Amino acid sequence: MQPSSPNEFVAMLDCQRHLFDIPDDVAYLNCAYISPLLNAVRDAGIAGTQRKSHPWEIFPRDFFTDAEEARGLFAELIGATANDVALGSAASYGTATAARNLPVQPGQRILVLQDQFPSNVYSWHALANESDGTILTLQRPQDDDWTRSVLEALDERVAIAALPHVHWTDGAMLDLVRIGARCREVGAALVIDGTQSVGVLPFDVNAIQPDFLAVATYKWLLGPYSAGFIYVAPKWQEGTPLEHNWINREGSEDFSNLVDYRDSYQPGARRYDVGERGNIHLVPMAKTGLRQLLDWGVGSIQYTIRARTDRISERAADMGIAALPPELRAGHYLGLRFPGGVPEGLADRLARKNVYVSVRGREAVRVTPHLWVTDEDEDRFFEVLASALAH
Image (cartoon, rainbow, N blue to C red; front, side, top):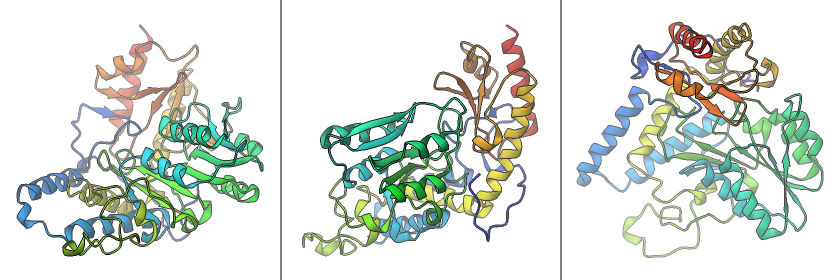
């Protein structure tokens, strides 16, 4: 596990199911697919929709204040400053922003992992084609040690290492502190898709030093769909945004003078903000989720969920079902590997009994609990699993 902030107190958290609208008979072990909304996040979205019903109560300042608060909360979560954060719409918006601004010379490599999530792949294929670069896809290592494999591949031929913190298929974790240090040694840029890690696994931009970090909010940030954040290292904050909208320009707070067109941008990473970034529905939802995560503490969230997944892993091993060893996986993620492959239709059979997991890639059933999961949910999972495997 990446270390928490040295000043962060880490403790086992109580079950937080009461903060969500999850029926007692639903065992939802699928946060890596999409998280349920916190009741408070749902209510923030409803309140935002109600505001749109009364547009005469929406003032110019409202396009800025919520966005700035959300920007600051996300910055606090990753150890950055508000100036380093842009508001996006998806992980793909962040990776496309990075691809727009990172140079690749003919023949240089862009490093990705086998079966990496597509939003952190397609932009790099396009950039390689445009720049006459090449894509280097690392195959899954036999020992599942992605960190070792990445470090061995990183040399002066690599222009960009575009990686996840946690592999989305089975929870395999990369040591980004070591990888970031190696990238700086060889002059490679580091771009991270943190959608499957930020908010549940401690992430410190000062220790990792990525060039760009892209995160969608609808999974482990417990936020809405179609919202996200982008961390941009200071060295890239004078670059070219994906789009040219009115709100990312200097002086856009003054609605009466918007037709005094300007070439200059809002300070820091704000130039990369997505259009309509002051979304009165989604931004209040995102910031409400962030506040709750900060209140719990990411280190405590990880510590609590790891206790759950460690126990699930041990119980699965008793049934002959393997998982990555604890030192190679993130604590919030469990990829269960079945002898002979995942049984056909297993996820559907579980879902018919209100037990929800995902099958991702070709090898693993992905079990990803959060703080809403109870011991009864865990027991129900194994009861239904045993029954499904017996038929």
